[in-house]
Structure formats: C-alpha cells, structure tokens
Length: 92
Image 1 (tube, rainbow, N blue to C red):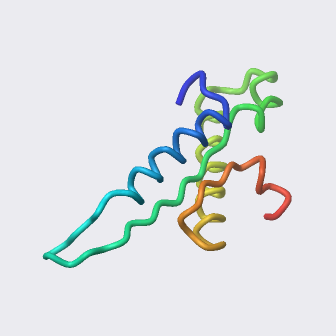
Image 2: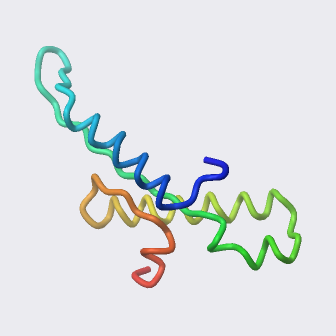
C-alpha cells in the first residue's frame, strides 16, 4: 500500500482479520473457520537500497521477499497472525 507505514498497514490488516473472524462462514451447510496470516514490510528496512538508487525492480523484489518471509514466519509460528518483517527479523 503506497504511502502507508507499517503500523497503519497492520491496523488495516487487523480490521480485515476481525471482520473475517466475526463473519459466519459455511461450506456445504457446514460451519467453517477461516484464518488469515499477513506478512508485511515497509521501505524503512531497505533504505540503503533506496539511497543507493538501485533499480526499482531490485527494491520491489526485496520488499516482496521480506513480506513473504514475514508471512511464512506467522504461518510457522501459530498462523492467524499479522507479522511485520522488521518486528520478526531478529527471530529469523
């Protein structure tokens, strides 16, 4: 989400997650529980690339890798969570 810091993005993900949790979901007439794990990052974690004027594709690729690592960290550590890369980097 352009022009959105990690905290605001996390707040949005929490609102989405809460809405999904409060909704009654059914499949073939049977209730089901839906979980969501979010992984996110922000440009603060790659400021050195931005300051060195790396190509946009290199920066984008690194951001995607960081968000992906955060998401898999959440899935491997309980699922149904919102993980921000800079908060989990010391745990990887």
